[in-house]
Amino acid sequence: MTTIQLELPIPEALPNELFTTALEGGIGYWSVCVSQYHWSNPDGTEDLTGFNVTVELTDEEDPEEFIINRDVIELGIKRILEGGITVNDTIRESLFIAVVDYENRDCDAEVADCVVQAGLFNEIVYG
Image (cartoon, rainbow, N blue to C red):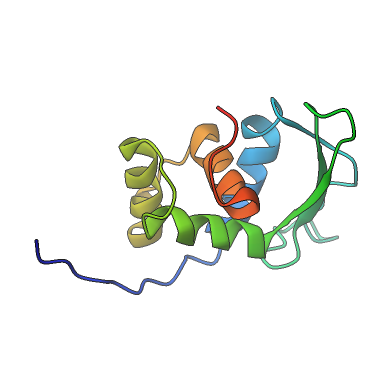
């Protein structure tokens, strides 16, 4: 089979959107926020580069903490779209559409959850 490799820029607002979606509905079944959840600037606009939170795993006796930020989200997007992470085809398709046609994106909490896990763990551990 002949394959091609594409280099696509990640839309500037997509990582913040996936971050917010993950925290508000995607990752709560395996983690809890242990720091202030920062996603916006003092004027109320989205902070597209400095968003972050520290989470703690809920299923461990000695919970480990992880920082979720733009780097983690971008790494998760990259890992999923390059095929290095096993996910449902629908998740990969939704993420691909969000990158190539941002205005017609449809990334739900499940997509955001997978992006965070791919970025943090290099695999889907939960769900």
